[in-house]
Structures are given as structure tokens and as C-alpha cells.
Length: 506
Image (cartoon, rainbow, N blue to C red):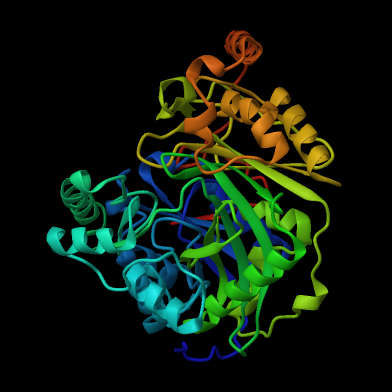
């Protein structure tokens, strides 16, 4: 199974079909490559950093994503108006939408990502399992076809043996997923999973697989070009999660031996080749206590946590995405890559860890990010801006690098202590908790870290005191700012001075 070959074509202008920190991230690399950028924005995103950073910016609708960022026709219309010759989808929104990738091709616009065939193959979890079976990639025991009848599903579960996992065939992110410990609860759990999958993805199909207890979630970054070359850029550990969503990641994993890394890397490459994959992607695995690993899914896009891979390899993944999309052959071979040091990422969300990580959108009265050697902050919102209720509540991704894991953790702890945010609750106190916990420091943890170790009262008094201090600083800052002149505004209400140069408004 292969996508059609890419014909070489120089990219001169990229429309970034996204918002927030990932839009800013893509634009920075484009700037370094001498490529012009086009931003799109919903009404509340008008003053956002990604809008000011772009060379051109176009309004595409109201706040609701299904009336703005998810409307393919609007994105493609802006691409035509701005004469962009490529679209980078970032992650989320349209990034894994095969019909959008196809529409870009039909419009003569380069889609900076895999072809539609690969997106479809890996977007359908049952189809992906069938491909993995053919490619010899290890999988947990389970079905390769969707199951619709609860009676049939119950029979499959008995055959596999409890506990089992019911998963949506058409999506991910924890939606349409249920863990079933015993037969008595199976039928009800399957009906709930089907209902949730139908609501979230418009597709109620589910499949069943053996539930791996106390697993590690380990993923491999891959790069593939249109000339038959596929490599991996080692692994990321993503086991610290809340609601099946990652919050702390690191690279490399502390549990992988050199032999296991090589074996898993080869499996990741085989997975990518099985669907004729092209561009950057991620193959996700579960690893059990006996170091057996099982294919979970493939994400056909750039991952949120890609900076930790960039830290340990020195490879700009967005640059590689662009060069592959232009039709170039990979300049990197597997033997060229090695792991340099260790990197940790903490996702800073506007969420309240003391209230089961409930989102806490609102204005950012204070946002003073840490800096210094070995610290990187990817953010799409700034002081005086607002974390909007309409979208993912991420404020930033904070990453650190050190010569070894201990040094990276120490540097992350220092950076978290320096980070000042006021106006919203954030995951910073939880991230501090994780960095200081014996289970994390020893590397002895699983995807159940939050359930096993975290309770709201575990948040340190010191962390709360730091947050109170940041709030006080914000109050004093606001009071001192009352007499200061307001910057001149452009016609769309944003500051008239761009951080780079004047941009064209659409």
C-alpha cells in the first residue's frame, strides 16, 4: 500500500491551518527557511500571537471550531486568495482528516503531512490492526474487525480473558474507550463505548483487545520520504497522563534497553512502511512489566510532544516535514542518529489539578515564562491574553534538556519554580509534584501514575504559596499599568507593531 510519489516542488508560502503554540512553532521554522506564512483566525483569536507573527492573516469565522478552523472550504479559499502553495495542519483540527488532505491535492496545494490513503488506513483502528498483523508488528490479543453486537463482543472478551479494553475504531484520545474487569459489566460498557464513539466521531464501531495492566506508553517518532526511505528518531515516554491525555513526557524512556529500543524502532518503521507512509508520524506502543510491547495506534501528524525528540536528536521536525513535502529525499539516515542527553516536557494547561484537572479558561493577568540554558517554552498565548473556552486549554509546553535524566529533571524543576502565571489555575503544581515524586525519579511508574500517586492534597504548600505570590505580582502589575499608555492598535484591534514585519490583512 503506497501513496503516489511526490513530485519535487519548492514551497514558498505556507498557510498554517491552526492556532496557538503549534501555529507559532511552524511559523518560526518557516521564517528560518525563508518561507512566507499565512495565518487564519477565528473572531476571538484576532489578537493572538500567531496572527501577528504571520506575514498575512485572514479571518475565517466565529469562535466555534466547526464554523472556523474545521471548515475545509474556508481554509482552501484563504489558500487560494493568499496564493499559498502549501498548508501545514499542525495537530488537532484537520491534521488527520483524509478528505482535507485529498482536497488540498485536488486544489493543487501541498499538504504538509502524509497522503490521504495513509491517514485513512491509520485513522481506522481496525484497519490499522489488520495492517500491523500483516506487517508482523506485535499487538495485544484482540479483534482485527469491528464488533457491533454486545453478545458477540462478550464472547470475544471471554476468549481473550478479562480484563479487556473496548476502543473506538474511528478515533482516539480516550473517547469511546472502556476498561472492563469482569463479564458482568461487559455489555453495558460496550453500549456506552459505542454511544460515546458515535457522538465523538460519528462512527459507533468498536473493537476489543486484551487490557495490558500497569503499562508504559512509549511512542516512536518516524520520518519517511516519497523515495522509500523511512527512519525513526527514537522514543518518547508518555506514561504520565490524566483522562488518557498526556501531561508529562520525556525522551528517551528510562526503561528501554538498547536491544529493546532497536526492536521497537524496527517495528515502528515496519508500521509506517505498511501503509506507504510519508512525512512525520508517531507509532505508539504499550510496554508491559515483562518488556513485551504491543502496537496501539499511529498518529499521522506532528505530535504535541515533538520538542523532546528535537532536543535529543538536534533535528528540526517541522523543517523535515517541509522538505519531505517538497518532494526531497531524507538527508538523514538511521546510522546518522544518536541520542544526546535527556529531555523532559511538561504541558502547562489552564486546568485545576485539585479539581480533577477541570479546564479553567480565562484571562492571563501574568505570564512570565522561565528561560536559561536548556529550557524551551512553546506558547501561543501571552500576558494580557486569554485562554479561550472554545479550544484546548494549553498555555504552553515547557521542555528542558540535560546531559542525563537527572540533570533534565533538575532543570525542569527549576524552570517550573520560575514560571509565573496568574489569572487561571494551571497544571504547574501537578508537574512540580511529578518531578519530585520518587516513582517518577526512579523511573518506576506506569500510565496509572495519577491514580496511584496523586491526590489534590498532595500539592505542596510551597507550590500554592508560589501561585499566591504570582497572583499578588499580577495585581501589582495591573495597578502599575493603569497610567501607562495603550499601544496603538491596527485595524483588526491588535498591536500595530508586528514582531517581524508588517503583514497583509485579509
